[in-house]
Image (cartoon, rainbow, N blue to C red; front, side, top):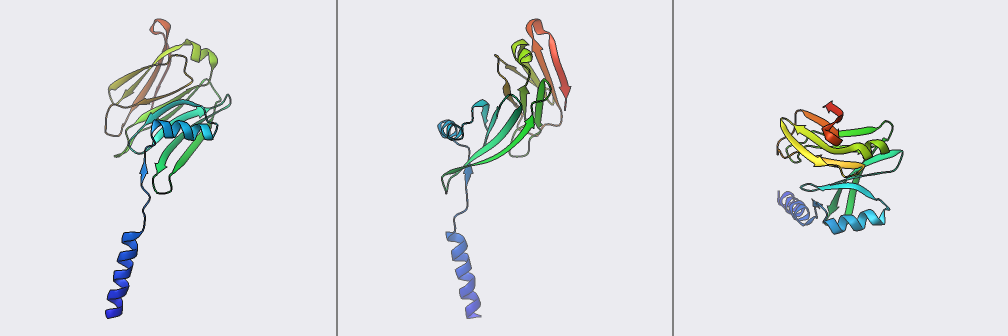
Length: 169
C-alpha cells in the first residue's frame, strides 16, 4: 500500500510538472513575419480567439490556413486546406462552433469579377454584414453573432447595385 501511494504521488508530481501546450492567436507582427518566412502573400487575414485565418493562393489554387502560436516551443502551428481556382468564384463557409464565430472565405478567381465586384453582403441567420471588396481577390467575412450560424446567404454586387452572384448555404 505504501508503494502504491508513492507511485501515485510521483505520477501526480510528473503530470503537474509537465508542460501542456497552450495555443494562442499570433500577434499581427508574428503572423506577418511567419508568412514572410514561408513566402506566403496573404489575400486577407482575420484574427479569432486562438487562431488567425489567412487566405492566400495563386492563379490556379486557393488556400485557407488556420495559424496558431504554440507558446511552449515558440512556434506557429498551421492547418491548411487548398482548393482549385476553377470557376469564377470559390466560397468556403464555416458555420462556427461554441468557441469560434461563423465566417465565410470568398475567393474571386476571375479577374473580370474582381474588377466588377464592389461589395459583398453575407447574411448570417438574418443578420447581414456588408464588406467593400476594393479589387481584392480573397475576402473573409465574419459573423457578428457569437453563436454558430445555421444559414448563410452570400450576395456579391457590382456597380449600381447590380447583383453578380447569390448563393445560400
